[in-house]
Image 1 (cartoon, rainbow, N blue to C red):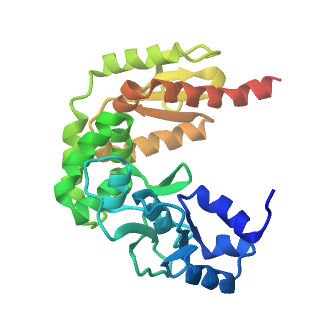
Image 2: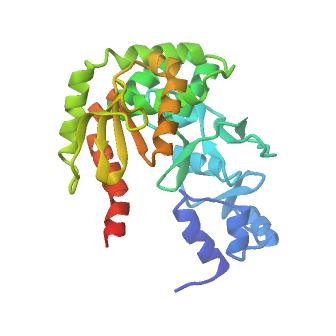
Length: 306
């Protein structure tokens, strides 16, 4: 097996559509002088100040995306570039757009760099891409004409995304980011009318029936922190010291009741109880996710019993 510096670097670059950065070259023992020599001989092209690509790799959109994420350790495709890479009906613009953390001091000669304190990304096959909910916030500010198209297409692909969008907008409550109000209105309209509370609780208990090893559950149990009153919880699991709440309120009502909910959760904690809240979107669209969370939560009690 060829373990030369060039061969080691080629292995790394093949995983990145042919692109690599200075740090990866240094790790492979390829020196700056060797890089200059190979640029001169036409073996590699310099794409940015600290990013190159092997000329044997075709100059594809994917290669350019990889190069864009290699300019900084936390650089992630963002804005229209992230939407296009995600398969949405958005033109593949040039230059590519990336986002880095707010405190990152970085410039690029071929990539448009944005800085954000709300830097949220996921990794797909090693490629860093800004998370869907944050891409919508970015588009709301820079390309409001694309927001509705991307929002609807993304939620059609995966209905669970809408819950993540609403929760992210909740975190940004009070922010002065441009376009946020319009995005919120679009998301709330897409949320639709929730089911009645009784129907939602029925759905929640249907989900609980899928949880292996689920102990006894008390429906509409008196709130342990408020004995003698009419305060109730949707479900109490005494053996797991767990309160479950099915939240059928629309987004605006949840925001309005934020302080009250947090007070109830704090009172539950005082009594040694943990609270899990599931929105109607989560119950409707992510039953396996709820089951998985409850299974993992219950394991702590299995370990204690052992």
